[in-house]
Image: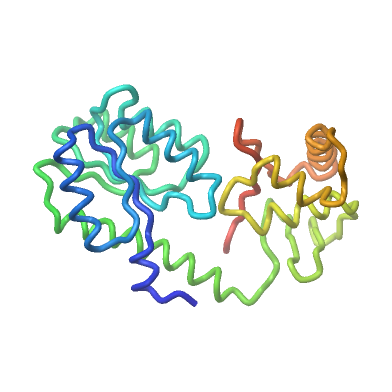
Length: 245
């Protein structure tokens, strides 16, 4: 089990700053406390970095950004990312923030905002609050002795017996349906690419039509179990959202 200090050090932070010198200073400061700091110079570049990270084994843990940026501003960036991830923590560092913008950010569920000139101690305090909350979830998942996961309304997946139940009734799954649900559930905090799903489900097949087979499989499974929330993340792949508690 990874200890808190190790977890905190390994956090992956995406910083967006269009002023080159300010960006370099911010990364240099944060690198004293955290191992992986990625710098983007505008919102468009940040979105590309996020998309690449989202399907990787280590996605972005936290975003620190300004509002006024070229190409894609901080609000538009947040709106784009919220289509993929409703919970990714955002901290805004900005020179000005009116009430209308603040209300919009609150509706999009940001962590906090810090006004410029930047107070480093305040930023670190806010970052560490985010990390502590994430660690609590990590700790719960690591110590959760029950292998029954809530994946929908009254819908549960038993990771030991590999069974899906709805309202305490077992749903009969085909071999391929079972492989699909099992793989998505066990990769529930990231998008699984179509290629990886096809390789996992049809590992012994040499067919070139398995991408179409996957779409048909998911369509049939959704018809069989409407409450099973398999999300199609356009251009990236699929995921199942897990509900704890």
